[in-house]
Image (cartoon, rainbow, N blue to C red; front, top):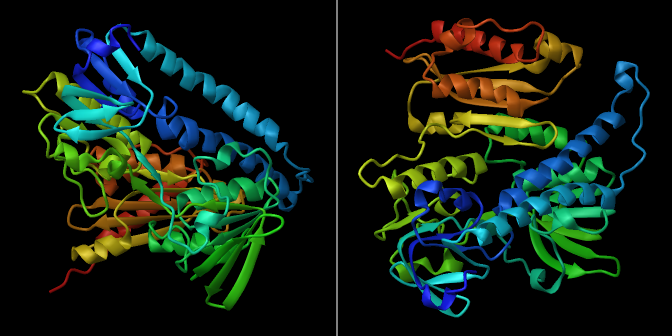
Length: 470
């Protein structure tokens, strides 16, 4: 905090959140007086408790999983166990200095005051933070989202973890119970199961990853059933303590069941932090889900207030938040030349095992739109490298518009799907047809990328044979 803190209550810019919001500040703002508000660690969710540390845990989990399953290739390997404290030390021994370095750098800037406290709106572009009121000509809300805790009887009376805390747990669970079936549940379930924990996934729905295309969701659930104790179609009647940890009393399709383990992870989704910021007091509209409503430029309903990242509900994806931060940074300093947020299909990946990569509409969304579409599925094992891997579960599903001959949805499950989907993202974002994507380049043989090439060629054939309604 600068020495003249008590006198400096009005700012040219106030930024709430030091995740993607931290990149809004640029050298073109050196003449501005800026307030940076961050109640947690600098770097936000992604760096400290989200995509970066989870992937640093997923990589050794992938290695452990491979070690368990190599005999079919004629290789004798085995998984002997994991040193969980050493893994955690490696991860956060690298991450924590980065977060602290970002914090110290912001403190060192003469034109930036850092408030390391919670804040909330008390008026138009006016906030209360640490007992003080500050105002700004401009405000950027980049305060993210938090774990949703469902209203389950007993949940407030037992210790549990969320994705915020489970990554730093001191000891690896013997039996981890996961409440939820989305990407956090499946990614962290993969980590702990691969490293030696028993994992029970308790999900209200009958399938895991239900936000994905239905074919992906169903196939993944079938594969996951071989690794996890899946309790699906479930109502949790109560949560309670046991002598050794946590218990759940549930009713599922098979009837009543008692599940007991030593650690409970609640991974039932995420909600925006707009309520904690009391954005209504600042004249800022939210939708029914609590997301801060923004226009195509990132502006909220309150003049001079912008919102980016998870809190606006457009995407809960770090790469999209980074793009929004770039647009807001430009728009703050170029009010007569506003840049729009990227409205192209947002790609995403789920780093469980097997991986999932997707972009564009699901088949259900295409069907609901009423437009004409065609869909094809191509197995990883039908490409040379997938065949060499003896992959029997991976596939690439493409959804195409026969009028424009373009790909409008791509959904992959299998080895390195997060990278393979990028080939389709590039073509879709550049406006290429499926014909151009398939035949406009030379595909390396026998790389796994041939899965995408062959799927595209199959989609082109589907376009050619499409029967138009009369």
